[in-house]
Image (cartoon, rainbow, N blue to C red; front, side, top):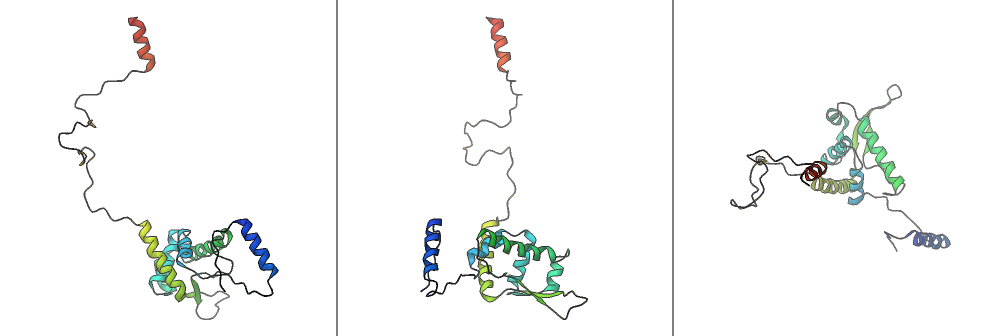
Length: 196
């Protein structure tokens, strides 16, 4: 039997955990650590632009991208985006967005042997199941964050609103005559006092 419970109260959680502890010898409890569309979307939303672009490039290359290609895309180096990916994963553990043990969606492949104690990445990969989840999440992210390009000329601030009839009696934004200066309440009181 497999049970998934979402949105339970804290009291319910404590009762359920007590029940599971009581029957722990009879049960096998596992936690779902797979990436799905929703988890991938949360992950993408927590990334900075460079790290999100890093993930996008790996996804668009069908889950395998040579590090040399990424180094060209990120001339300041890969450390920034890869560190951001690691922090996002840890932030997800901390906030409970995904369970401990959820693996990083993008993994590094090292090439050659160690050179002076340091190995350089040769490629970055994303597994097939994760790839599907992140491909769907990126499409959803793009749909919710992109705006269509403006393909018209900007309207004039002085143009009549297209919803108004040509002969509509609408207040004008600019007057031919200079506006009358308004008086402060003190000036009006003084003027009334002089008349009085």
